[in-house]
View (cartoon, protein in one colour):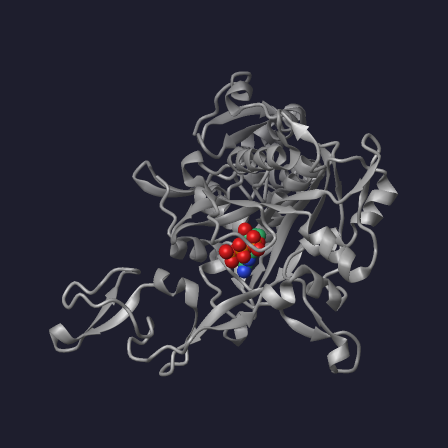
Length: 496
Ligand code: ATP
């Protein structure tokens, strides 16, 4: 049973060192988050797997790592200075701030005149059951009038250099995409790529969100994994414009990627932007939504940005950003398909989907069924008896050997049952236990059998495997994609 409410997950994330509130000892910021020892591993794994699958394993993709601070004109050309705004309203009473377009998605406080002014909290979008009123006042305090909406630019402003003057104003990038567009010609010239090809980038982005919230879902500092895939708009594939075909392909690829690494297919769906929702640069945008605890919300977007960005940067910089089509002997401005995912939102979705509570022998077991490629720790080496020096020494030796290829941890701070539960709770797919039979007993003249127990997280099955086989077994399980069932069939079961 998956039982992950946001509160349960926030608590697990803090307790086990996945995610902490930024600057917590000063009361926290509420809009920025720090990744702890396990969180940083999980996040790095998501980024590594994404990069491997979308950059290294494709022959039509290259990578880039552009700077966060860019020339201020970039943001004029891209439209961010003029258009990257959200409508904001303030409560005249409690001074709380809201995004005008999201205010009806919040539960609201109501002092009901039909019940002598009793206070109620009413579900988002619903009227009061008693008086039939709908929300008009502040949803938080239920008393204050709201100001008229005014546009608020989400970019963080700063100054380049020691003088705080208008000429030195620049911005922390609100998306990684623009770093790719302004380097289009550099990449083209240095790699001699032919269309279609893509440039991928993973990096930080900053948005001064009016209402950050829902844990790491919406924060002011976050990471994006973005691809700008350049396509020849004059080309046709299967009788359709190439950009439209590539857009469909990318939508399918992205959806498949998220389900391959663990999201249940039922928890993911597509949302086609209507005309009124489309950004000014977009011909078509499709969002991948995930069923987060607060409702279906955007996990990533896949937009057809047309030739808007390259043309804008060409106009503002005076530099040609075209591609020479050898076949048609013409210069053209490519169209761009942009799959844009948030690392933090992906991590939140993977954690939520992996979280399960189940009952095992009358006790609650919490298990994170993370895909092994994403799991922060791949193997835990555990001693059955930490008083026996040979057992502990064997554990340390195994940990040292295994961790060269797969992050392996040693833990002896509790009894074995407890140690297993702790690893289940952080998603470690395999535990290796060294016991008395492994090392034998020199005092009694008993030789060890040189075998250890491997326990698998999801089935909790255990098999007895010679130490000499361990690296081959884990190479098959963790690198070659062999199933536990296949491996377990080749070894005797161990007692639970
Ligand atoms: P939203 O509508 O939720 O504000 P958006 O449509 O503005 O998102 P994009 O500009 O398309 O988002 O950014 C691409 C991706 O970056 C999003 O799908 C999301 O995964 C991530 N992202 C955007 N804003 C944030 C944020 N404030 N915190 C965390 N991730 C974010």
